[in-house]
Image 1 (spheres, rainbow, N blue to C red):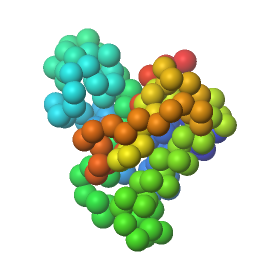
Image 2: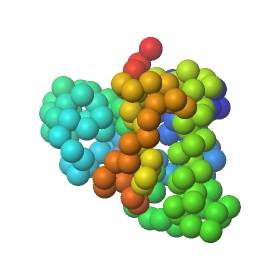
Image 3: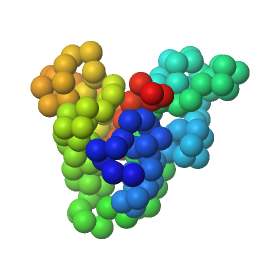
Length: 144
Ligand SMILES: [Zn+2]
């Protein structure tokens, strides 16, 4: 999987794995836990995990590095997890713009993007609470 080919959360998860990064909180990458806000895109359009399963929905979001801060191959290129995830945040933001991804959300620490406010490299930045220790990314138009 190459970044220019990404069209879904699963595609992005496969790209992350190909460069040594571990995606999580998605049905295709270890399953989704009931730890997200109600209606989170991790639940694919349902309010929670149970309803997601009942309706057979697919997850539309991934988290990176929320289990073991040392488990990712890309970490060796940076002094801290925060530096690594900050680099990844901007790499994904620019790839989304360049390749026209259906990117809906991208959150990490002091940075946050939501689709409703414009193109990835032009929308205002919104720091999102509770994303200090992991990067969250959602591509909602995941099936086309
Ligand atoms: Zn998340």
